[in-house]
Image (cartoon, rainbow, N blue to C red; front, top):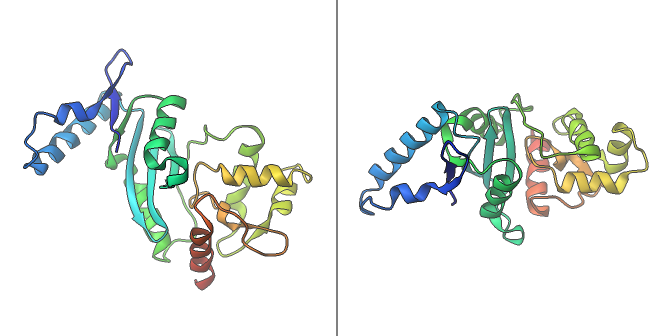
Length: 215
């Protein structure tokens, strides 16, 4: 995985370089050094985007957060370049100061784990929605209003977002949702009740809807 941060002048550099001199037989020392680097970057205001990965029943998710809140939840899709491509996109669109720093994502991890364990029906997290623009942002804002275990059609979401004819645009907004699972685009289905497509794949959507239906 990529690990980027930068110096005080804003130049990006590869955090892996710091670990090059450590013996490969001492992963514990490497881990401690990385944790110290992350803590120092956070304390000195040099960490713009913290990330970590999390294994779940729908695959390993990448979680990324700024100081505003959770910025990105991403499936590890080979078709879209996997998590490495997501981190590259975040570095280009938001900031090159990106570092694996799990401590910032503790609350998000806890709530997502509770969700998959069937102990949480809504998320209570600060969200950084800067990656969603225009009408897509309007759609994203509507999705948390679809209750746990419920579904809405693309047409219903379009109407709720103020553009009843923009059904296809709702589909695009769901497909580019930067925060799947937490912002529940999986609850948007076709008018005939069939599941339709999903950013994490049809199987992942089936798992999420099945989890909520069983509660």
